[in-house]
Length: 344
Image 1 (cartoon, helix red, strand yellow):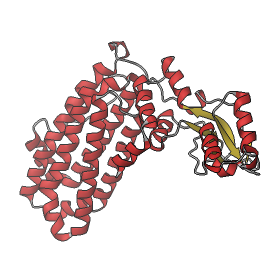
Image 2 (cartoon, one colour):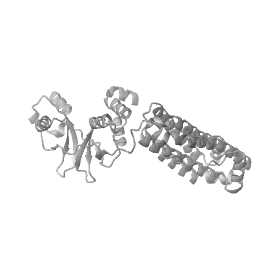
Image 3 (cartoon, helix red, strand yellow):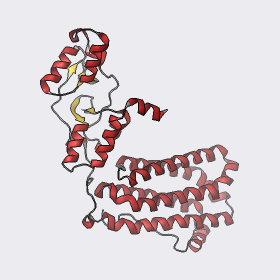
Image 4 (cartoon, helix red, strand yellow):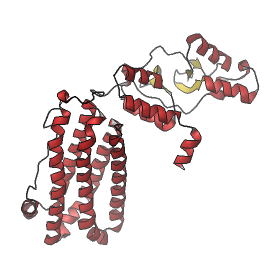
């Protein structure tokens, strides 16, 4: 990412004078909407920097960005929302709830940034959240503020927003040196890694009419631990692992030839597409504690398999972040009792 990718217009080198001039012409609606846009652009720049240089490049930058967003939220909560709530109580409550969600996600990303494990998908989620929140406010609270806020309150608002603008200016100053490929920063995410670059395309599968003996035979013959289960239309109807077969044999007390694949297979299948970004696949694996995912085409037919082992080999070759793989593997391997207790 070249210097200048993050374009921040510093409207308030002297925030009071610039704010009063804006208030005389455009008022708070344009000021706040433009500030939202700049925050979104700043977050997009952070994501681009992480994509090029890896998560280590974000630590100093993210602090400036996070404070700019928090200053914006605080300005709205202390200057606009108290009066807005008197006329639109429900909408004001919903806006405060969205502010809380943004703060939670900011904190979560901050922890990941400090650990050098921030995900591109998480940053994109923040961009999407900020965009949706800005659209809501621009359709409701901002027009109200344009008409109903007294001039003295508008002046306070412009001064508060000026603080956030200065943080964005600091971020603009920080983004250049860290984005320079010659700066010696870890470069593990030069481009978003696609599933297509890692999948095993020779798909070995069984059908819903097979028994567990046939599934076990296929796994033994091909030295694999998982099979997609295919229905009459060629779609993935389930997934079965060697562990599923062992547990079915133990719990049923019958020969494998007597047990249908459908008895032991997982019917709720998490699948991906060859064009999906690897970050999204790792997130799904982490959230649902799965080690392998079928890769399907637009018609639902299997075209490959991707596993945590494939991602680990890619990390060993320097193609993806080793920290990212470690985080995913830790989540996948966590005892289910521990996961359940933490979610409760």
